[in-house]
Amino acid sequence: MSTRFHVDLLHAGGATQSWQEWFVGPKGVRHLALVALGGVVALLIILVTAILPTYWRLSSDLNAVPGLRRDLAARDSDLGVLRSNVQALAEEARRQVRWAALMTAFSQQVPPTVKLQLVEVGRVAPPAGGGQPSGAPARAENTLRIDAVTPLRPGSPALLEVAKFMAGLMRDPAVNKRFQLRSWEIKPGAAASTGGAQLLNISIVLAERAP
Image 1 (cartoon, rainbow, N blue to C red):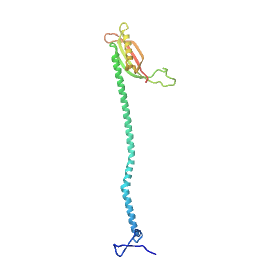
Image 2 (cartoon, rainbow, N blue to C red):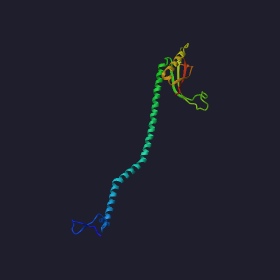
Image 3 (tube, rainbow, N blue to C red):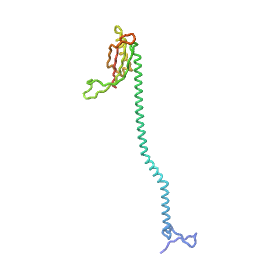
Image 4 (cartoon, rainbow, N blue to C red):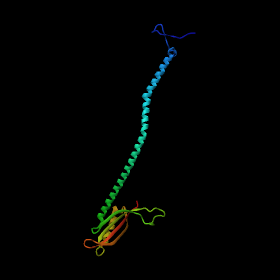
């Protein structure tokens, strides 16, 4: 039987210990405790330097999610209000442009002897049974009402001027593109306050064309 041992030439009188004997020798328990303590310290260092900051960052991000959702809902609500305001402004701008075009057409087509009293845009419901399918809801339509007066003169110049006015108005692209003649009426009115001349009341109703 042979026994293996190591001779420590640097320390005369003693024998070196192998790494196995370092753990199983008389001081093996202490050595194992030191190694275990070193491993625990290394794990703590890894935990503190790598894992905990990531965990804290993720926890902070998760805690911020409800606030971000509330902010997103508030921004979405503000965006909806802004969108509705922009749409309203765009519609008002289109209305102003159409109204300016109508006023230009009136200024070009109204004869000098005809004085406009009222130009009004309204919305009226069509009469019952006016070609609507049975059971279908009646749709209101936009109308343009024009009230004017002209002096009554011998012969038919006043009537001819009114007819010319209506014909020119309906030929104007700004009017004809949007409206069609619905009804018109001419009837005697009261005497003018100056001169006592008899007046004719002119009432013209234009209906907006279907889109």
